[in-house]
Image (cartoon, rainbow, N blue to C red):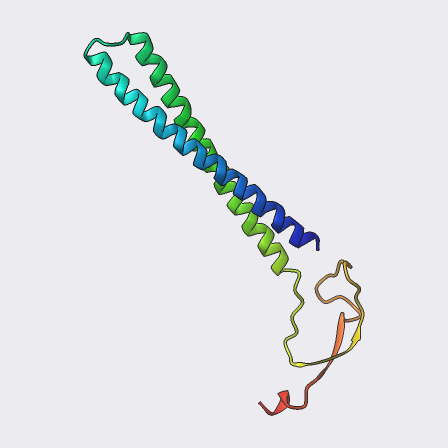
Length: 131
């Protein structure tokens, strides 16, 4: 269950990062429009250079924040993919069809490749040999 919990955590982290990115994109769009509007107003002499500079600084700050949130989303996506891969690696798959007649491993026990005694003893299904 710890691998499923890790996936749940990473999904939540990704959703949170995506929400921050979405909000940041909205703020960036507003800041860009405000800056463009103030550039027009400054060109007409309607606002001071200081007001234009404040608007530019706000736009640049929002742009940097959006870039940082994009990186957060990418990291969260990578972490989720890694958690899913880790979960997939926990499956023990037999190379033959059959019935387990002996199990030498317990739930949550750490195992190694080619461990002795074998993790499972499997008797092949009679129908599988005919295929």
